[in-house]
Amino acid sequence: MKDYWWQEAIIYQIYLRSFFDGNSDGIGDFKGLIKKLDYLDDLGVDALWVSPHYESPMDDNGYDVSDYYKVSKDYGTIEDVKEFIKEAHKRDIKVLFDLVLNHTSDEHKWFQAAKDPTHKDHEKYHDYYIWQSPKYDDEGNKKPPTQWRSWFGGGVWEYNEPTDEYYLHIFSKKMPDLNWRNASMKRDLKNITKWWIDLGVDGFRVDASNHLEKNWKFPEAHPGYEHFSSLPKHHDYLEEFGKELFIPNNILTIGESGGASQEEALQYAGFDSKEFDLLIQFGHCWADSDDSNKLTEGKWAKGHLYVKDIKNSFQRWNDMLKDKGWNLIYWHNHDQPRVISHYGDDNIYHNISGKMLCQSLYFMPGTPIIYQGEEIGMTNVDYKNLHNFRDVEVFTEYNNFKQNLTPEPIAMQALRDRARDNARTPMQWDNTIHAGFSDKTPWINVVGNYRQINVQKESQDTNSILNTYKKVIRLRKELNVAFGNLEFIDIDNDDSYIYKNELADKIILSISNFRGKHIGVNFDFDISGYSLLMSNYKAQVLAEKMLLKPYESLVYIKNKEV
Ligand code: NOJ
Image (tube, rainbow, N blue to C red):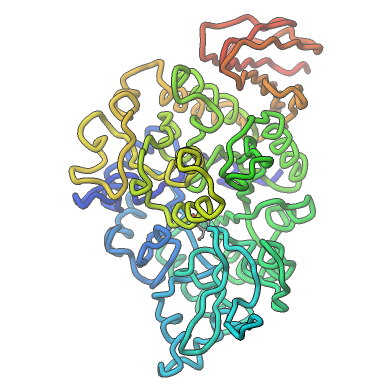
């Protein structure tokens, strides 16, 4: 077992735009983040992953970068960034920035030159992106090279009249994909990366890292994800970055990739990997998608929650990386709904289920990433109108719903259940106007429940979700929870979530009910010697047969026999 600082660290994800507004413009920023560092320190976190802060037209809230060397004026100045790094380090908190290498903004100077044959730098930059000539239909009308579908809905190709070509964008049309086969482009990205390393960052989360390579034969397919996801050559690119930049500079890297096999998981995040240290995977994220629903496709249709799918995914990843690499554990990030609305109950069992979600996940081994606001049980939005939403993905998908003739109430409910904006509303600091996030109207509305759910209120309540998070974070460190071995003992049960985490000298037994009703559980192993560590109702003694109350969660511990 290797010994890296990040194995026992708690990472906390900051969605900068919505964390805290330090300059009264309704948008979160570095000045605001600096003001809240003491809160984060007190919570017990060791590293912050900050969403993209670079200059950007904000089509995708900063994942569309127009200048990697500049800080977005929404978020502050380079001096603010330096101050933030200094202040975080003073508190022994590491700083991880988000590195967007798959695409730029269409307003980036590279793309401006690439798309314009009269631009003086056209020749150099044209091949920084991915271009294809039009196809033609029977009537001689231009049509895109393929029917590949973008991750945000709609096609991946956008026509560019001046060159009579289409460019590829697997996200929004304002985010053209970079051509990683172009050596000069790669050199430029390496210089950018080195520049931020030299500024003092401790690590990066590498955005969309499994999409860097494309199938350059551009075969016809729909949706065609296999032609721009996880192609073998992207590992070469990542390894090149690892060897030249990340490893020599002792930089923590977190990649992002869905659906990896064991071989690939180790390739990304094995201890011997030259690519990343940790990997964000999504196996547990959509355990309640209703694939049979034809009105709203994929993640948008919410159905039965398969608790066993969540457990199977975590167990699978634990086993794949066991002794050979290291796992990340997290409920959700800025791309998925709020976990309490998703897998818990944001209504009558708000407090109970929020604590259950904390206790069920964070006594597992690995490195946790807590998403801002999760620690107070922030919920999905209560928006009534399409215009309340801000995310570019919402609008392209909403058009799809309309084309599929999805009735309006179903479309709006899909957004309230599944849209990424659910996780992006302003952090709820207190019960004053705009939840204490800003004294100006925020860029996106706060959720109406901020008077009941906020940091100030929960700090003062020993029984709050926030205080449960604090306690669990402290216990994780005291007990070395990160270094245990995970074994679910109810893997096929679809209501309960029960595992042992075997540590060097102790065994943790975590028992949770993921349903809003009573469930019975039986144990057929030796239950002697356990004492209660945490519970979200009044304590229950561990017994061979137990009745768990709605969303009840009990954590027991015992010394290992020697
Ligand atoms: C993944 C990010 O998490 C998401 O928010 C973004 O839209 C895409 N990559 C494109 O950068």
